[in-house]
Length: 272
View 1 (tube, rainbow, N blue to C red):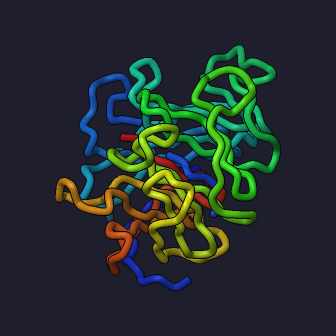
View 2 (cartoon, rainbow, N blue to C red):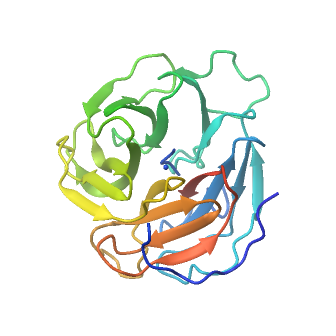
């Protein structure tokens, strides 16, 4: 069961697995400013989707699971990967010790749809090549390995940023990246409350932020939580901590928004 959902008072900074990441109507055209928060529960192999909200709107309301989607098997690591593929708009996929399962069909292939990574790697997803479909990737001690294909076993994009113990964060942002192998993407690492981001696709950190810091924090980049079109930077910081979401709309500001949705051990994400 999901934890009891309640509104809680925002708090200041006092003090990690996926980055990662379903629309109001999963197969209908969507408003790209609409965000739906998601948690994946490995113990139950299920996605829980909330009812969502417009970016910049009140977020501190009671969130609950308006939709539950079974996917994977207990112990899998689930990702919600926003993408433009009309055949798979949610981008649901799971990672299990190097095997990726990209569909929830009953005849789950033994070796997965895609082989990428190994046990202990941290999975992530984002569209790196600009084709509108989220790619699968793993982070390993500072190495980023990305497969832009949906079958096979070899990455076709490799770069380095971060180190052992870091957690990867990534978000598609129009105009970011280097327009070649990292198109329209901001990526980086989270390290004990510090965020180190590359917005240019150069492999070097050019933006840093402070937010979080508790050992159980799971970091997530989300689209800028603002009603102002074009607000910069174009991303906001999110921390999932034992069922509570902490959102910092302006990565360099003081405001923090807090709501509950999920339970300890869940993996956070979003779709739009």
